[in-house]
Image: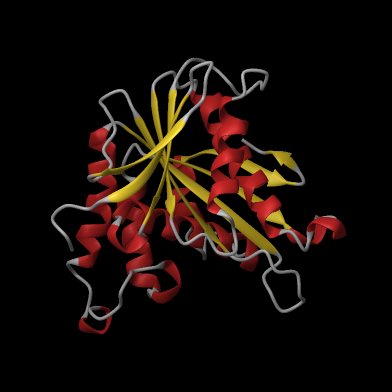
Amino acid sequence: MLKHQYFYRIRIFGSPRLFSEVIIIPEIMPSPRGVNIYIDESGDLGFTGELSPYFIIAAIIAQGPEQVQKCRTCMKRTMRKLPKKYKNIAELKYHNTDDTYRRRILEDFSKTEIEIAYVVLRKEQVYDNLRNNGQILYNYLTGSLVANIISKYGFSHEINVIIDKSLDGVSREEFDKYLIYRSLDRDNSYHTGNYQLEVTHVDSKQNLCVQAVDFIAGAIHRHYREHVPMADHYHIIEGNITVVLDYFKGRQK
């Protein structure tokens, strides 16, 4: 692990005139009043019969630097105890970890004050004309999730949206533009105040909080896919969940 991590950040300011710039920054830590929203997904936007009928986008909401450090600690604590078979894995993920270590990470996370939001897409309900345009679907779902988080919490300060840079099949530029539109449009009901929004695309291999939200998204996806209450890991983190968007059943929380 590098002592210092550097990423490209797209900075977007919630003033009447929106503008952006690309800069190189160190490890992303919010100000004492700021918030980091880490985002990852589980599943895919394919529509063949062999694929999962659900697509999940999850977010963890870390308010202030102390919660970011707690998130990182959850991952570090488990990683120190991993057996040798995991040592050569480039990145720890829900799908390549056994249930023992999945549970440890999620149980550690559930004991923090960090909260969770997610959107579930029931793919069988997607219109045919949208099934061949995963970018539009992905942008809409993520934009809706971030906008609902901002609305629920009423943030009026620094907001960092942090997402894995390897967006599968999704144009990063179009994603950023849409996220700005949904979150900062003053004619939009989600806009709750004058705040600064920054969208950052990072290498998840070097960001423990993005890795943590991968475990969250994986647990949520398994919950919908297998429908085995208490036998999956959803119940472990359920108390941390504050926002649920179910497409197309509407907002559940």
